[in-house]
Length: 403
Image (cartoon, rainbow, N blue to C red):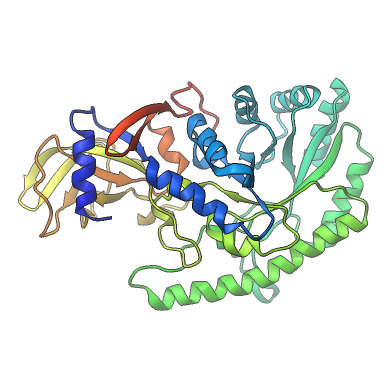
């Protein structure tokens, strides 16, 4: 992106009330096509991660424009799954386990209605909660076993990846699957293995050649280990009689490597569509930033500096500068190290060649993560062909907050 993009967005947003969030549909649609193309020769479908979008209209756009390669949604809560089904979606995997009774009631009702909603499980406690709800209502709930894809090199205590499932090997997974056979009201119909250390770790960092090369090496070694382990688990479950209609893996940053695993039936993409700050620097995949927010310049506290109103939209996860929003346009703006992005104001240092910024002008940012942007705004402005063409509601705009 360059300052011609800034001048274009500034003209489009002229007169709009700030702050606002917007999606550049030309970039968004390019990402839809690009993600589909990564699976062109793999035979796999792409499951859309709703957590990274949190907008009904934009998820619908992915399915309508992306074609048959897009199939199903990876949701983040049971309540959200019911909300999505009420808007016409189906074939949903809820990616995070739960045992609370209200969620079990929702799962049972959806199953009775013939909806395909699977809930991730990795323990007997999860399966027993689903079984009890199924037995009580006469329904059969579908479980999706999750196996841990983190990497522990040389069988050490070092853990590279996310802390999710305790299931790591064939005996542990088979034991849980065997225990499920004695439970009524629940069945195992899917398996998921998310390689977070591949899908969300940037490996082509600007100005960090050695670090990037090291990350790529670690990724390569990790892929070899967990792919063999995941595939052996799937094969063992199949020999034991499990009927897995879905084997899910990957994420936006691992679309290429995950697509090469013959045991997967599908891959997942979410952040790929907005391409937020943490998804700018992958070697294997390249996305176009499409989701932004604009703040107004509120004051000029000193020469070579402006202060924007608001902007403290930090991302979840381990605290660090990489979780701060990124000033994208004009090019070269930098946050002040002692202030960062604040709830009520965000000061910025200007580069020498910055276009003139006056009070009321917009400054364009990206959130570090994708769907979390939607938690701060009730609507997204849609921009296409040099103008605002529509406004669509986020989950918050629909009156929904699931976590």
